[in-house]
Amino acid sequence: MTNSTITPADDLTITRMGYGAMQLAGPGVFGPPKDRAQAIAVLREAVELGITHIDTSDFYGPAVVNEIIKEALYPYPADLHLVTKVGARRGDDGSWIHSEEPDDLRAQVHENLEHLGLDVLDVVNFRSAAHDGGSEESIARPFTVLAELQQEGLIRHLGLSGVTVPQIREAQAIAPVVTVQNLYNLVRRDDDAVVDYCADNNIVFASFFPLGGFTPLQSETLAKIATRLDATPQQVALAWLLQRSSTSVVIPGTSSLDHLRENTAARDLVLPADAVTELNEIGAQ
Image 1: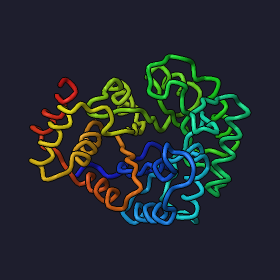
Image 2: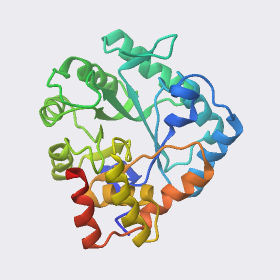
Image 3: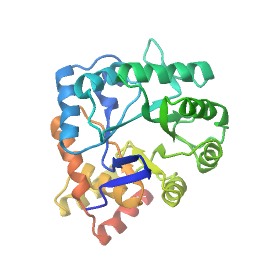
């Protein structure tokens, strides 16, 4: 079993196995869920399973997911940490609209506070315009706004989403960075340098879409390894991410209780060295 928690700041300890709440909204992360009672049950089960790290945002729905989290879990357990994001809005058609103007960032923070029922947000990630990474556009202006809100006492910790190492360094010159959330998995490994930088600087690196972008051949290889280890492909992919670095965390999302339990079991799966070697080679297939 990998170390189960990480402490990127003195007053912040989270479980490396987290839960991503995005899928609790309707199709396309837009509108209400088909089964609100089931969504509430999944959140409560996540906490029962010992997860203290829930990833969310007010642009999931919008507002829908945060309101469900509040209904399911408020008043929140003392050790539960909600990590949210700002930097986007949703169009009436469900489109994703980048939004980083200072006044709107402030409004987004206040909306997260309101819909979660909080006076202060544990962690707020700034979602960059290039959410999948690869852009060196400056993030100093929007991140400074969030740093000001932190100084005002509305945010405890700051993080980033969809960024490069130079952008992390740029943000660190403004305020401490405790989390980075990027698209990264066995076959989408463009951010290897980001993962290593985060490990070297005790920054949480949260991977999303752990099974995104696989070819049929890569999926077949993963399935064979999973069968050999008496695990599911999802569990193996999550375990590989958890073993990838000392500060890696995962935030798999689901609206199913069975899938939640299956995903959470990956925290107890230790991959042997030969399996890790085979998995490392998957990206080259």
